[in-house]
Length: 450
Ligand SMILES: *Cc1c(COP(=O)(O)O)cnc(C)c1O
Image (cartoon, rainbow, N blue to C red):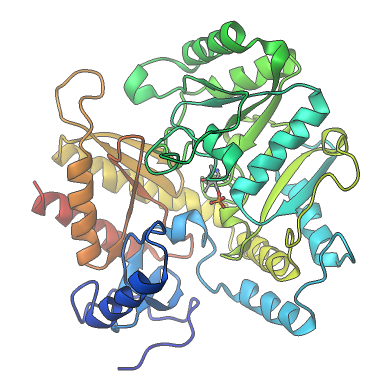
C-alpha cells in the first residue's frame, strides 16, 4: 500500500475508509508505542498519521479521516500550509538555532512586531517568545508579579492553563491534569466563572459574584493579576455571558490588577476575530498565545503593555529554545496565510454553518442541552434532559458518540469539567463539503447511540 508523502492543501479532500479504525498497521505501531512510550502520554485515536492537509488526515493503513480538531486548535491554517512550509524550508536551509539570548535574528523580532500589531489595543506593546502555552502563562505571571509588586493570582472555575507546576495550580480539573502531582504552587485563587447554561446569570451578575469572591477572599490589593480564557477551552468551551469580561477587566483596571487574557486556544482567527477579546472590545494588559500561532510548530508568546513587559530585569525572561528561528518562520507563514485567506472571516462562516447544523441536531436530540461557542470553536453539552438547570452531565453518551465518529473516520474531541462536552475545532482550511460530511457523521453517531 502506498501512502501520500506530502500533505498540505493538495491532499485529496475526501474521507476514505479501507480498514477498521484503527487499522492493522496502526495497531502494530500501537504495540511499539506501548513498549517505548510512557503510558502517561495517552492517545485518543491511535491511527498513525502519514500526511495531512486541508481538512484530511491520512494514516498508515490508507484511510483518510476528516479532521474536526486541528490537533487541539493548532493547525488552524491547515496542516503543511504553503506559506508555513515555504518559510520553514528557507529557514532550515539557512540556520536552525543560535539561541536568541546569545545572538539574535530577524524572525524573532518580526513575530513580536506582528503580535504588537495584531493583539487587542493600540498602545505600545512588546513580547517575549516561549515554547509552550504553559510556559507563556508562567511568564505572564512572573511579569505581572514584578510589574505590580504583588503575589496573588486569580483564575476561574473550569479554567485550563497548562500542566507545569504553576499552571497545574491554575488549572481547575484534578483528573487527569493534577491528580497525584502536588504540592502545587501557592497564591493561586479561584473565582466563579460566568457559565450561562448552568448559572442563568447575566454577565454583570456573574462578574459581581466573581469580584465579591476576589475582594472578600483575596483582597484586590494583594492581586497581581486575573488570568482568564475569554472563551474557556478544555473546561468546556464556556462562553461567558455578554458583559462579564468587560466588567472583570474594568474592575482590574480600577484596582491596579493586571488583566491577563489566556488566548492560547481562542487566538489567531479561531473565534472569527484575530483574538476573542476583540469581540467585546476588551483590551488586556497581557495576552498569552500559542496553539494556532505557528501552523503546528512549537511557539508561544506573552504580549503586553510595553511598560509592564519592561518591568522585568534583563536576563529575567528567556529560555534556550524560546522563539526558535524555525518556529518563528512558521509563525510568520501562518500569519501570512491568515491575512491572505482572511481566515477570521472563514472562521465566522464555519461558525454559521456549524451553529445551524448543531442547532438542528439539538432540536432532534434533547440530550444536547446547550449549543455554544463562536466562529470555528463550537461545542454541544450533553445533559440528562429535564433534570433542572443544566441537568446531570452525560459523559458516557459523549464518549459513545465520540467512539462512533472515530470508527467512521471523523476526528472529534471532547472536553469539559464533566467530560460531557463535544467540541469542534476544524482547521480553517476545511471545505464546506468536508465539514458538512463530518457533521453528517456526528449526526449519524447521535442516532446510532440513542
Ligand atoms: C492548551 C492550553 C494551554 C497550555 O498550552 P501547552 O502548549 O499545552 O502548554 C494553556 N491555556 C489554554 C487556554 C490552552 O488551551
